[in-house]
Structures are given as C-alpha cells and as structure tokens.
Image (cartoon, rainbow, N blue to C red):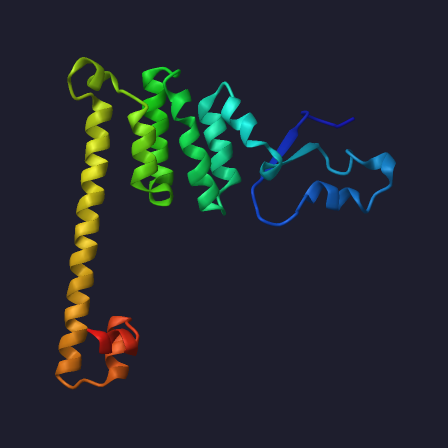
Length: 194
C-alpha cells in the first residue's frame, strides 16, 4: 500500500472543540480513498471520548492518570474530581514507579491541582524511606521542591508587599495616578484602596 517504511501516525487530541483532521481530509475524497489520503496510516484519538472508568481501570496507572490529565486539561474541576480516585491504585504499584509518577505530577501538575490533591495522592504512597524509617533520595528531593516552592511563595509575597508600599508611598507623596499606575501595574482603584 505504501512505499518505503510503513508509518503509523497517532493524533491525540484534547481540545474543547469538535475537531478531527483525518475526517476533514477524507471528507473531500471519494469513499474508496478513505484511509489512503495520507502517505501513511493515521489514527485519531479524541481524549474526550475515553471514559473515566477505562482510565481508572487501566493496568498502567501512569497511563490512566496521564489520559485523565490530558482529557481534563481545560476542566480543572473535573480533573480535581477524578485524579484522587487513582489513590487506591497507587498502593498496587512498585514504590519506585509511584515515586517517579508523583514526581511527574509534582513537577507538571502541582500548580494546577494544588497541594491538597497532591497530598491526598502522596498519602496513598509510602516511600521506601518512610517504610523503613530513613530519608530516601526521593523524600529528600520532594522536600527540596516543597521548600523551594515555599521560599518562592514567601519571596512573591514580599515583592507584592514592597510594590504595594511603593504605590502607597508615591500616592502619599502626590505623584500623579497615571505615573503610579504605569510604574506599579496596579489600577487606580487598587492604589486608592491602599
């Protein structure tokens, strides 16, 4: 059917609109050519069509969680509803696999899912260090990430307080509102409320 090395492209789609590029291409071709319009085989997978129950029942927990994360990338509430349901499955995984998966969640989804959901997933997993009473490399790494996040949040709050104090000081010194807005990024209403 194809010259050269057989190729199969799989398109995973997780957008909000009803979109299927393979169907769009085939719509302009006679029925005979459907499936042959590209110089390779192509399959289209709309993540929205994968049932949550299939993701939760997936033997590869990381794959199931990954599909859910992609499926609900634009629906935070639904993601926060489904993701904790994987906690029970984590206890069936090998400790090093769970540790790796939690690190990926921590790196890629932490700001999106928040500390409560992450804590719930983390509580379902006991690291090797926690099990045997020592701090493992994974425990140390997670602590470093948590400490760095806490430090970054404190720094952000300090910077915000400094910016607010600067705006208030400029306002009290009689600097024009236009200049204060331009320098601080606050709105005139925010500056007036300080």
